[in-house]
Image (cartoon, rainbow, N blue to C red; front, side, top):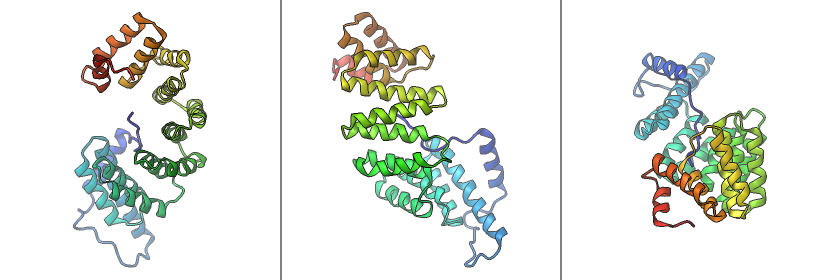
Length: 270
């Protein structure tokens, strides 16, 4: 499941970044004074770091990791105390499978902004994916408790997923149901529903799993391959042959090269 862990910038923001960048000095020209007594100088330096960090986030979302890494390095050279630059660079290092560098950058970011909800959520998810699930929960809770966090449902979703990984299905359900209550758009709601379908399947609650999948389909959202594959297995266990074939046809049509469809062809239902 793909999570949006860098806030997406609107097109106007991207255009503004590019326009501002054209008027800025290159990385070789950036000079940070040893003693910054001028508020204007401090503001300019932070502005440079912010613009390059936002550009790095855009390149990260586009999959241009080398350019994203370069932009974060420029941002940090401009302002070594800008936490968001380390946060984005940590995400780039993670995508490049440079996990030691990612861990170091997340820690640096948290050292500068220990209560930042985005950084805590991202680091929590990083820890969860690195097999350090127990360490991730305090970071998710910091993000969730921050009243300024715009998307707390993401931290609840991640906490729920990590709770499933450690076998804590009771708390996983609580986290995911809270995420569902807070989800503000169809994409977020579908993301939570898929996690709840997977949880219900693990618990043997096949009717619940089937009903939640039907809610996704009826909402007009194109289900991802993992949701369709879960639905196929649910219908198979319920003995609903026609429904199983219908979902399998969708999986073949939408995701013919997916790992889920290959698993279906091989008959590996578990």
